[in-house]
Image 1 (cartoon, rainbow, N blue to C red):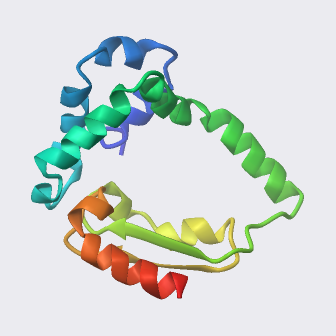
Image 2: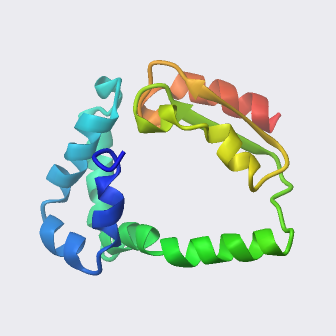
Length: 147
């Protein structure tokens, strides 16, 4: 698991990821695109370009790492909510790709620890980037869920 989730520990480090990624955002993103997709063709060059533009905006790269750096605060707030008996009551749709580390986890059961109304499914022949890899299947699930 550590080899698969190394990026969590790396992204938690203050300032180091920004320093090492530097201006080579494309290469950093491509690392994940190459390893976390099952349908690599779903991330066409124009889609990759859009990701690079987004992460190249001032502050965007830091903000993406800060999401990981909020882990300690997030966990404390989760514990506080659990101790107070607070749960998420709105419907949740949980989707994950059949290929990769998330497929090895009991994803719906994890969400049921926090939420009362959880439905979800594994997206076949899909890695981490569901919208790019299997947009047709994603839209089918979203339309049903939002109807």
